Length: 136
View 1: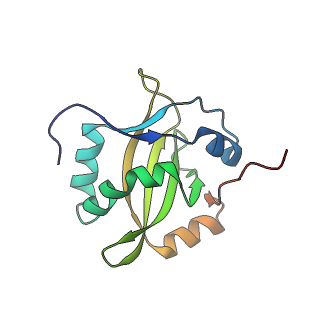
View 2: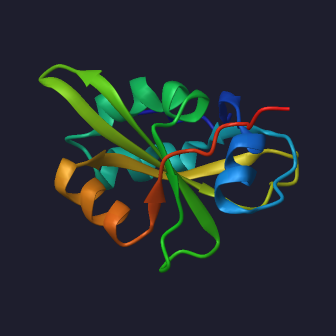
């Protein structure tokens, strides 16, 4: 776990993909992991921490699913299947909808999901496949 206050830049947030999928109007910016969020993930999801931390860049760069929980209107979710030590795992990154004072988006939580939770969120309309750019 990190003890410093320097955020980790996880990568450029794919705002065009997110905007097409969710109907949002996000401005360009990087996704970052603050020391506070890093501690939260380590403390609240200790069994997931290694996998989640190693996968966050890939989850940001190329999500399998994009969604928004009706219980968390101030954020959205990027979800991706990743290769873990036990085969395929699913990692969720919850990200703020508004940019911070530096023009970036904060990952405020991240954890592993089960296939059942993903299926349930898809059925309820909370997660969907990203809407790719159409022809033309």
